[in-house]
Image (cartoon, rainbow, N blue to C red; front, side, top):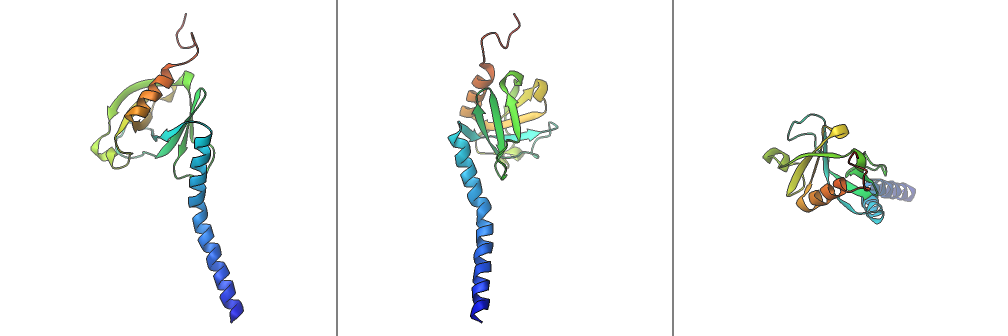
Length: 147
C-alpha cells in the first residue's frame, strides 16, 4: 500500500510540474527577450482589413534594423514576424474600434503598414507608436530617399 501512495504522489508531483512548466517558460522567455533589447506590448493583425477579430497579442523587440514580434502565448523563442526597417512603410493610424478594444491592450492605437507589409496592422500604446514611427523613419543617411 505504501508503494502505491508513493507512486501516486510522484505522479501527482510530475503532473503539477508538467502544468507549471509552460507558465514558468513564458515568464523566463519574456525576461530573456527583455534582456536582449527593448521590448513592448504590441498586438498584430494579418490579413484582410476586417476590424475586431484576428488580433494576436504579442511582444515586440527592436534589434538594430529589425523589429521582431513574438506571440505572447507561444513557447517558441523565434519571432513570429520580423520587420526590416528598410521595408517598413507606415500607413494610416487610427483608434481601435469598440469591438477591437475587447481584444487589445488598453489605450491601443492601430497603425497599418503599407508596401511589402500591406495587410499587417500593429496595435500599441501612443508612446510606443511614436517610438515605432521614429524607428521606421530613421535609418542610414541616404538609405531611404533616391538621390
